[in-house]
Structures are given as C-alpha cells and as structure tokens.
Length: 391
Image: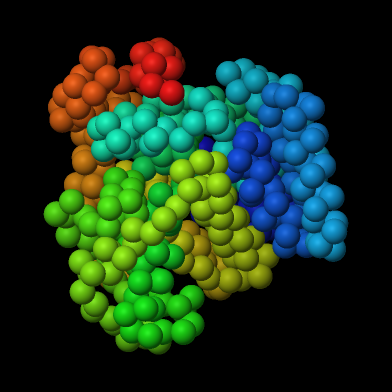
C-alpha cells in the first residue's frame, strides 16, 4: 500500500487530464446525505459511483437525489450504480473497485444497518468501544478488496475510525487514510459557544485545533463536560489566541440533537469536508485544516493539514500547537474511557471496566481481547447477545 502522500500526488497528476472519481460504498443515510452534498457542488468534473447490494434501492435513492439536484439546477456530476455487491464478498468488492477505478473511496457501510449503536451503549455502559468489531467488519473486507484491485485511491472510513483504522494498520493490513466524524462533530458546537461568549458574528472564522478521541465527542455533546479530563485545545480568532472558561464553553456544547438517522448529516458532512479538502489540494493547490479520527492509523482524533499550495501535495498531522506525543497520550486517555485499552499487533483489547459494565448491564461476558481473525465471530456474538436482545 502506498503512503497517503504518494496517492495524493498520483491523483494530482491523473486529474490534469480527466474528471475526479468518488466511490461511495454503502448507500444508507450517511451515503445518501453525502451523495446529495456532492451533487450540490454542481461539479461538472466529478464522477460518482455508488456501490451496494440492493439494485432497486440503489437506483431509487440515486434517482431522488438526481431529480432533486436537477430542480436546484445543480445536477452536473454524473452518477452510476454498481449493485449486487455483497460486502462479505471480497472478490465482488474488488471487481467494483477495478471497474470504476476511483480516486477516492468512502466506506459508509454498517454491519448492522438502521441502528445507532450509541442508543444502546450510552445509556447502559457509557462507552462506544464495545462496537469496534462491528465497525471494522466490512471495512476490513473493503481494504482487502482494495489491495486485490491494486487501487491507489484515498480511502475515507466512517465508522469508529479512532480504533478501526489503527486496528487494520497494526495487523499489517491496508488501512483507510482518513476517518470522518467523531471529533469533527464537536468543532461547530465549540465555535457557536465561543462566538456567543465573545460576541463574534463571523463564527466560521474561529480557528480551533483539537485532539481527542470518540468518548469526548459523546460526553461533551450529550452532557457538556469532559469527565474530569483536561482537553488539548487551542482557540484563535483573527490570529489572536482566545482563552475562555472552557468549563463554561463545553457546558454549552450540549445542545439538542435528533437521535435517529438525521444525525448522520454530520458524518456525511465530515466526509464531504475531507473530499473537498483533497480535491481542493490536488486540483487547485489549496491548504485546509481538518479534524479526523484514526488518520494515518493513529488511535483517536487529530488535527490534519491537507496542503497542495507548494506543488507537491502532502497531508500531515498538525503539530503547530501540540506535539504528536502529547496528542497520542491524550487520545489514549480518552479512548480508554470508551472501553478500548489498546490496539496493537492486530489485537484490540477492551478495558476491564468495560467488561464489568457489559456484564452488569447485559448479563454478557465480553472477551478481553479480539484478535484480527476473531472479528467476524465477535461481531456476530455482539449482534446476537446484545443488539438483538436490546432493540
């Protein structure tokens, strides 16, 4: 597998003579929102391909987006469908990748569709890491197919990338370059709160650099506090560093949100932001700061720069305000509270605290460790013994 920077520069050269190609694997709510957002750019130099199992559903979902975008006079990107692709079938996925030859692949698939896992876990165990085997279940198949197809596409993963991407990397497998969502969902909330505190009208110009894992996305968003953990966060406006009362700011981040699929507008928007940053860098030499979980196989969430302003395109973790070691340590502290003790050598280790909580809440003995070749069996166990008994 080539490095992210190598793939970005391969894309830069290729797009000098053809349109950009984005493949969306899995057209659930995240995929549908993302397709709509991409069509809304009215980008004539963009080809989109959606991949999934059910041909009738895929065609129907694509049709409504195409018609709606045409009404808005934005339907300028082409959209194609590759159906009858079972995400348990590596060969079928590989064939789909080969046939479209994408520049960017977005994995928006889910092992158990139609359910926000957090609706079960947060109320009972206040931790999301338990779902890691489900989050990686299809991702590992897609990455195996990616290698088989000898693709050089940039891959974006949507499901619990804080642990999923490093799990793949630690197992010596091909792994997604970027993760979407999680940490990124907090930034707008913080900007709104800071703007209110300082009476800033152009709140979109508030610049935040933040490093933290998934647990704190949830606990801050839902409860407005950090569970006693200090945050690595830098806030600036107009080049000036702001130092508000963070306890007050974070308390105001707990704002009402839907708990159904409408929440996936945020994850789809995170995917869209990454795609826009990549295409902006390779096609127009732009420089953008993102916040991504699991980026480059790191545990947790990090600030990332995608930069095409100096000719050669590069992506890297931003260390302008915090060192990489500081950010790694903070992310370990955060993801531990999510029930993940470690991800190393292809093995995910749950915390003892999570195991005790699962036993108390669900009457189930969760394994301490999940080796890479035990992912499917563990995911099936969690679906049968926890999800299906609690939905």
